[in-house]
Image (cartoon, rainbow over all chains, first blue to last red; front, top):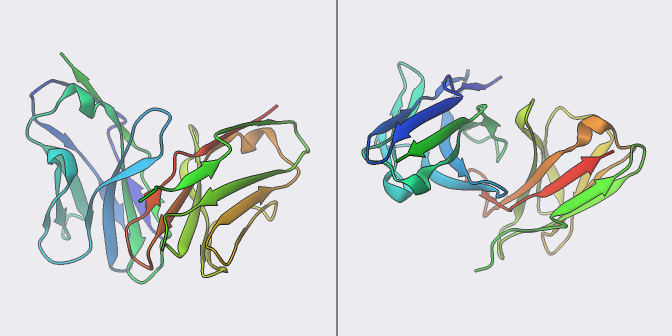
Length: 114
Length: 112
């Protein structure tokens, strides 16, 4: 069984400051890792994914994440946030070869303030 | 390319009734997955269909069912609705196994 832990339910940050949203996962098999963003009253939008290869993954809107196998982490970072980044962010994991069944974390609400 | 389309956007039903939600995937995508999102349980996987066959199923009671048509469009049905079924139901499509999911904006179901 897999699980995803997002320890921070809310992260307040000032505009133009850096931010890190934490994600840890647990799985007995090799996994794919994802970060999704959800704006109010909308579905989920893929920010970035780790399938294989380089452990540093760059995504849309200036976000990046680093896969750390030894720490089973996949933290999301952005060097300088904007008001428009205010949204809920979800980390997700799926088994390699397990189809499209994703296990999601509970989400982190990022609130960017002026 | 048009995105994933879910209809209706909002739905209000009474306990005991049944409901059918519809999802049109991105053109060319053959995999459709369904997720339930609630404040208490978060995002939970319901089921996945690929080429009209159910490929994966989550831990939901049999009241939750789905199907996929030959044009890849999918429907999910919930029978004998309960208050706890109130949720945002999200559909996602992908071009194949292990390909990223593209989500629709969801159907918000309220059961009274």
